[in-house]
Length: 143
Image 1 (cartoon, rainbow, N blue to C red):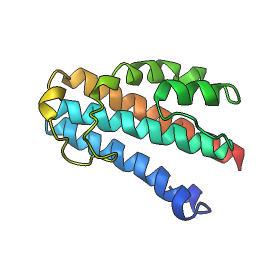
Image 2: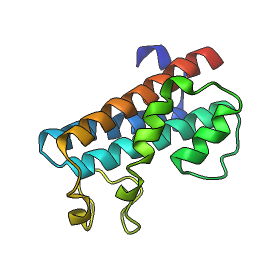
Image 3: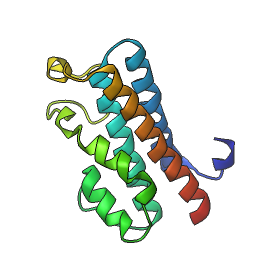
């Protein structure tokens, strides 16, 4: 993260939040909490795309992965991460309306998430990392 020392305050905090969620998802994977791991991976991707939209000075109308993808893709080619967007978007039923926006360790009603398996969680983490790395690469190019 040294190359991003010029980022200050809220901008850096949002990028750090995305990475924190990926790391938390990895911990949940280790603890065999696959649903929560998938959820946090997906949330990390949303935060990364919102941050990228901020850097492109785009007003985001919607916070869904699909809508963020459509808005950003008009200005920046997202083909390299489209598979990840599609995969993580398929996990949208992991969103739980009564869960805090930034679930860290536990999701109320987590029994709803029990259908997720290890492969789902590993793929979700991989995809959220790819989107996060795409964000970092483009921040360098936009500054």
